[in-house]
Image (cartoon, rainbow, N blue to C red):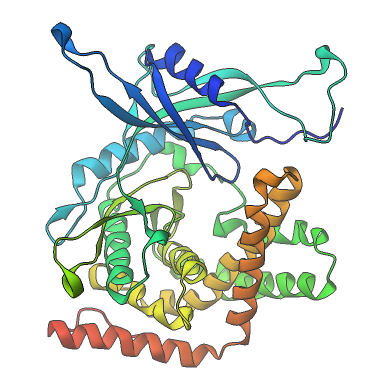
Length: 397
């Protein structure tokens, strides 16, 4: 039998069937969103009106977890508790509550269930025998829909980056008093604690230079960060803050006074227990990769300034930030390519683009004088301190 991907690959009709079977809802529209190993759908349903009144359209997000993670899905219990915790804490910016999704109970009264679903083989692999059709058990869950446009569709102005940093720091602060036993699990390969496992994937690169780059990044990360992680504050982090997981709405005003404000944060599927600086490095790496700025490394300093406005970083955290950003870009370049190789079809060609973006940015980071960027970030942070007539942000080395 050909190698099968652990990623689910269900059709629109299957989504409608699941919505009806598990939630008693009749689906009107289904819109699949990009996702590395899981499947995510924005669905709309039409509710029946009371006493002959016309029903209303409601929005939800249906998530189908990959087969590997579906084997031990108990970690979802911790994620759901964390989402309820955040909802009670009410992270705010400019006196406005930041919206986050909440889990929805199915007709059995639980927040998730395991379903036996068909998984597609590679397009070029023909199924000659019906007995060869593969099935896997996948975890299915439903979340409330958070409205808004994803952040990467709007210009990355200094203000929007500063907002993003503010909100990221606010979420980290809100989760300081949260804990759930499921966060004891070691987690997937994307976590910074697992950066050394990148060495297991260097064989996917034909270019020896790329292999050496990954090896060098891992070596420095181990020596500069992992060997000193005891000195880095830890907690529950979102794990993938970036332009695809933050939502915006248009602010009031006309002309130059009109802009965008961040209104929500979604996709907490990568949340885990780890060093807080990992959160900052992940967000900055994501935003650097998505930015249209001519100097995305420097402009990321606005995010850092916003973050440090609500949660100052220690000197040791700041010292680790640069190599953490490099490690995250190495992960992006490597795992995007590896995931595409697991699903080598046109549907997942966007992963090749992600891998290429990761490489270009990693090379840029490694060629850039580290000290110069830190000085630029310090100047940006100091400019906000001067404008607000306060000095709470600390210093960047």
